[in-house]
Image (cartoon, rainbow, N blue to C red):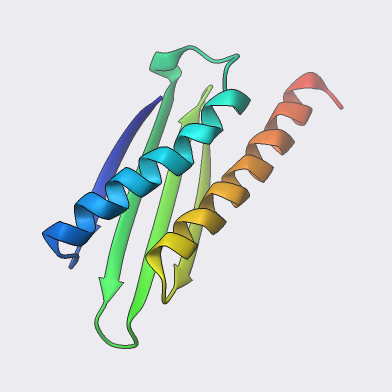
Length: 103
C-alpha cells in the first residue's frame, strides 16, 4: 500500500516523527486489504496543526478497489488522532468487505 503524507504548519522534527509513527500504525491496515492488488491501494494522510487551540487535524483518504474511505479526527495529541483514525479505518474496511461479500 502506498502512503502519501501532507503536513501543514508542522515542524520538520515533528514531521519525521509523525511520518514514522503513522507509517507503522497504518501498515496494520494491510492485513485487511490483502485481497486487493498493491497498485489499487492508496492512503493519503493530511496532518495539520492549528496554533489557536493547539489542535491537530488528521484526515485520511483510503482509495481501495474503486471506493474511497474517509476519516477525520481532531485532538490535542497528533499520535492519538492517528490511533483513532487507524481504528476507524479498520472498522470501515471491515464493513466494506462485508458488503462486498454480500453479508
